[in-house]
Picture 1 (cartoon, rainbow, N blue to C red):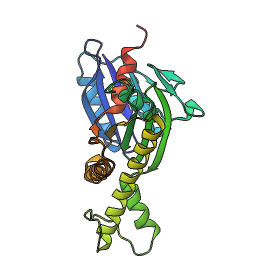
Picture 2: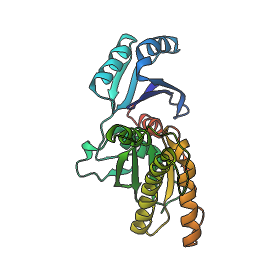
Picture 3: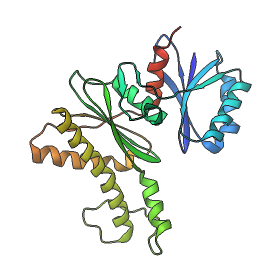
Picture 4: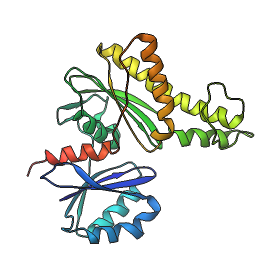
Length: 264
């Protein structure tokens, strides 16, 4: 048994991996403030106990060290994943491969193994604290991707950076007539528009319709806007339906694939 860890900016996710089934199971999600009170007891209850852990950490050095200390006290050694030039048949096309976020690299490895068929480009949109939209060529090359503020960050930036705009919680409308709806609709439109831009760019680059994967805690509030925009595109361009495929734990999936291919 191996422990897989996805330490994000607001929450961490933990899952068990075992050689027989080769996938992440029994996912536990914790807010950062709950780690000291919940994680030690959860680790102590696992049978057999974890002796090895691998993960990604984008939440900073302090949180990473806190996790390492808790795991060490439980007799579990922790190794953080660092992006490589290539892994599992996927080539990292970043100018400096090591500068790619470890969470993005792990998630890309996760969807690389979910591809529908050879010759299909892949697009992964992750809606978390930040939104990332990353592209993979049919040949297995990470082409690059976008980073933009996530939905909550967009709302906060308007509330904090202006004198009269609220922290909005409005409805999505095509033509909003109040400020809350205007902010919420503008945020969703920006997120959906970025997905559409990258889908079109990848289609043109590869001359094939991309398979779209989505992940992240903010996806439910954006799903309607993204799906509506993609349906409009498909209808206008006479394309087959563009249906996003939800991948709840793309990072953990990637870590599981790496664990399954690690030397014994």
